[in-house]
Image 1 (tube, each protein chain N blue to C red):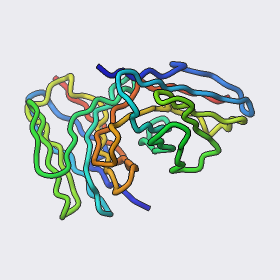
Image 2: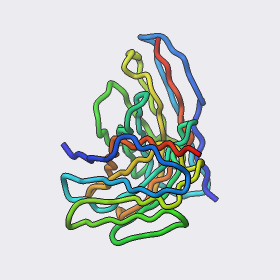
Image 3: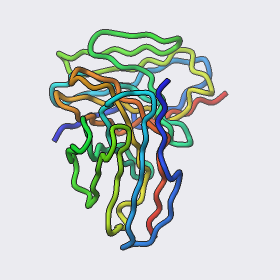
Image 4: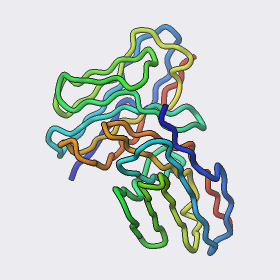
Length: 114
Length: 108
């Protein structure tokens, strides 16, 4: 069975500090991977997607970047956090092939920027 | 940009009653997903539809790709159905656009 793990579970960071959030998928070969952000009380917004190692597409510009260093790993990062980066970050995966594909979400990382 | 209009934004139901949520899409939508988000923030997959209807227990969903809308019916609501429900529309690429959510409270 496939599992999706996100780390850390929660993070409190200072404005201007760097950030790195991680996501790992186990039990699925070459999945499509996605990053989402959710403001407190708000809806989810897709940030990035990746269909293969080393290739990442940006959907929304939020002064964040993403990388896919391994087939099963997706990293979200920034060198300088803003207050507006606070929220809930979710990683998701779907099957490859370009066909219609259901997305499955990880448990999320709650980020507070002070 | 692409928008997903979800209604109602909040809903209160007594146990045992039924209701429906609706999402309207502004552009061509390849498929729709419905999720429930619990208090911890976890998103639980309820339905994935490319067309037609699906039913799972007390939940039933329909997607009309031509008329650009989807519905989620909740029958015989139970306390554990409480949470925030989201629909999400998949475009022709890899983008999933979420609705604004429906906060559902089921009380005894």
